[in-house]
Length: 582
Image 1 (cartoon, rainbow, N blue to C red):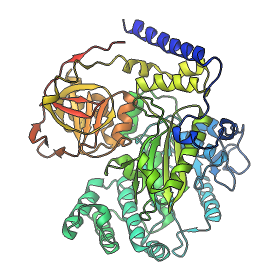
Image 2: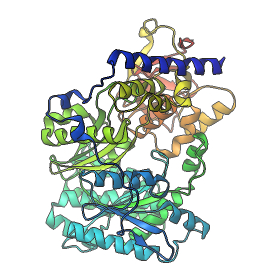
Image 3: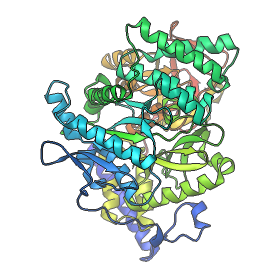
Image 4: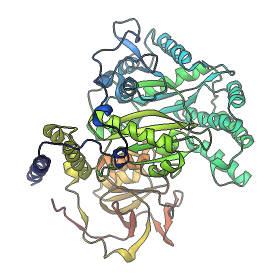
């Protein structure tokens, strides 16, 4: 029966494409986003050049024949989007974005082959790679006219993972590398003290958690203790002097765990690269690959890139967006951003961000450039894009693009629309709809959206559509246990993290107190077709007591609730489901 349904769905997609082709009469629309239709851009002006066939001679070579470090930036770019297996999705797309003329901060990517060799050698970098890395840093220094570790003109970098296949949030990132007790003083003198010490406390937190294994919750507790002592609610309410105090508190956390934060920037970089390679074999990354049947990869690449800053104040920010709605496939920008923040703030779900449309009022010039870049990337890659960006003092920088995760219904609509717009052929459109997307079309929905209105206890952001019914759990381990015993669980968290991935997959649905439509919980849930509601402001989770309060009621582990991912409603009790109509 399932096979018949899948076949029927494929035939239905093909029929939609045939109908679209006939109605177009051989012509196609060009510009897709309404805001861009008002401009004078044409489809031909937006099409980017084809990827180059081979890297330039700028790639650094180690002891073997193949380059192990590939550069990108205005001074020259190696590699392109065809080299995903070697540079990973992030590295290959950064190279491609640089080549098509987008504003990309310069950097370099260490190949997946190095990750494979690192693991084969017992977690040691192959001979000569570190020299390649230091040469890569020198190239960034020349382009940025800054120096790594120099307080007078400090260069800071990020270190990020990126496998050939998208694994959102599964491996590690470290931002603001290069800050030390000495460098932060120089950065404060060149910019402003609050920005400098805000960046430093972020590095201390991330480096401790990702590189040295000091759990993030210890830093979070130090932050909460300081905010309570200062009588403030938000991180952004802390003064420069408060943040200096917080940095000292974070360094004290290191000491309680028998660790010490390295004051040598090169040592920071070496340890961070090792940590990203190590994260390839982390429990969460292995679980994600097993769940998604990802095999045959060499490992993760590592991208080292000059930092740009969204936390410089009210003229700066950071965001994540999809070029189309990943839940429905509707042809509109779908995303969020935060002012005075860094990228991890958005995806981690620690703060609930603004919807992307508001950016047009706050920073119209940056928003217009962002729209143009989105259009270029869709035309170039011929698919819906998941994009990360930072705005530093009103200037837009593009940090990442990749094919966006989407629900089954969205996959069908996007494929049909891109065909109608003349971006893909009929055969290409059919191939865009995967087996997992078709499976999602077979998921049940609630029998009635009106009968349960009296039982609604609250509402959040409809992050991933569908209907889910299950018993409340508060940890990924509980969700896995329910699944193993044939039960149905709804995972309730303040916010999710990559460590929750196995439990998220085991749960029928996911609810978070914090986070937006592009948070970790939302992106992963949509990719799996899991019902998810994020940013429930009325929800208050108490993990210690294994209970939450919402709508004036308290719910405990094991209680039944229902979740409507289409509307964001949370419903008390077991709401009856109906089979899919397809």
